[in-house]
Image (cartoon, rainbow, N blue to C red; front, top):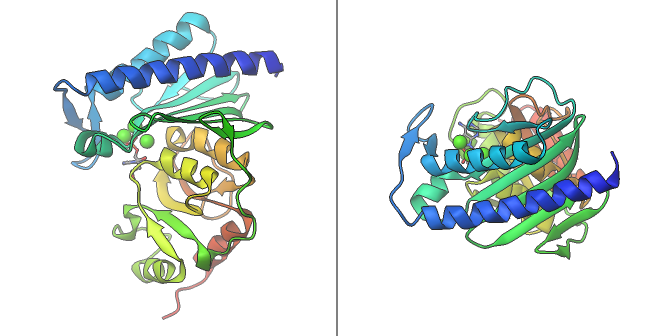
Length: 269
Ligand code: 2AM
Ligand code: CA
Ligand code: CA
Ligand code: CA
């Protein structure tokens, strides 16, 4: 992929993500509709949909041959990652958006023939833009982020974990989760997967583990973390698939290995 194309996509994506953030800030001052999706904890607002539609309109007006995979399904039915695919979460952390009016982000990953080239995560209320281009490092508000500490160990780690600790799942039983919580230095739960990735890239948390994320939750974050020396896989160590749901472990390589080993071990007792 010619560098000039990447630069151009990056410029456009930045312009649109900042515009979208501005619009969200304005729209959220007025009453807006909130609906539930799968269950009462799974929210979507008219602002999520409007924002996704904004990106789709912008992208197709300039790049009619690109594809858009968005959480609210207003883009294409994407069946392959061939060509240029924009993977977009218009509001990541909708529960935070509705209940806290902060701690939500817009996430855009641009994949070209299946390879993550550009990742943008915009913390709207904090007005903080995280950006990464494959091979060129990660940046926070224009400042290069240093590589994350490769020697940090699991017992010294702040680990982002979500509500899977209370929800039965096949991979981690309750005992195992208790064991993990005792093993690490501390746990955090921010309510926005995109921000958890951004915080790992920034080095303010050290790992993130969760049992169900969709491509738009991880597309940008994976690139941001890779560009500072981290790694993101499924909890069995396999590659993430940007076409489907994934379990996720993200951290430096040493903690990643510890978490894989920990998950594979039978629980102690
Ligand atoms: P969302 O706000 O875009 O839906 C909350 O812990 C994080 O998990 C958020 O990033 C949220 O994204 C995501 N999330 C919430 N409910 C989810 C669900 N049912 N399936 C997948 N991801 C979900
Ligand atoms: Ca959602
Ligand atoms: Ca999301
Ligand atoms: Ca969302």
